[in-house]
Length: 284
Image (cartoon, rainbow, N blue to C red):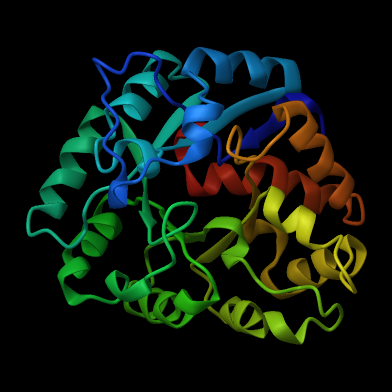
């Protein structure tokens, strides 16, 4: 697979114009990375060019802008041939379906539920809150992929949502953060592998998992083939988490390529591009 075909489904962008795009972080605390390593859309494009990344699905920074998707939408619209925007709405609000439709009309190509992360412990309670179900129905109607940021604590709710909304593609950030240090057969990650039977669940491979498979008894050579065997490469996609994760985009991509060298060329082609185009048709 050539570098021109590589697609990244998890970079972030932060505006350098705080008057036009004022920070209003979810949970009231701004992430450190967004202050220390802010990357504008122009900087992202330059980093993509340097790394050989063709296109990207840019993920809205909830820990910078809360539910205001203005910058990710405006930024991606500037580079409509290369970028699509993935944003967030408050799915518990009665007007969530209307808000989703409005953001899609402005250019949003996918949605993300941020249940915790760098600024707050995971709270999966909103995932199976019935107040959120109309938003999920709207995702199904509009054909939007729903990305979920959670850990193993939220996987029972993810399972229930996948069954309730079988036409909605669900994409797990950071592979759902499985515990892999125990090594093969990865018994501590069984809750992740249990999701494989649900064909509308997809997994995002980010720097976190490429670091975790180098710890203790884990290895890339034993873990990634196991994931591909369970889910199929057509349900796996690479995301850089740039600039949240340290390093240049080129360095992050090189680490991912090294970690997935144990897979065959066809499998890597899906993970580094073709799956992304299924999740976000605007990247095709």
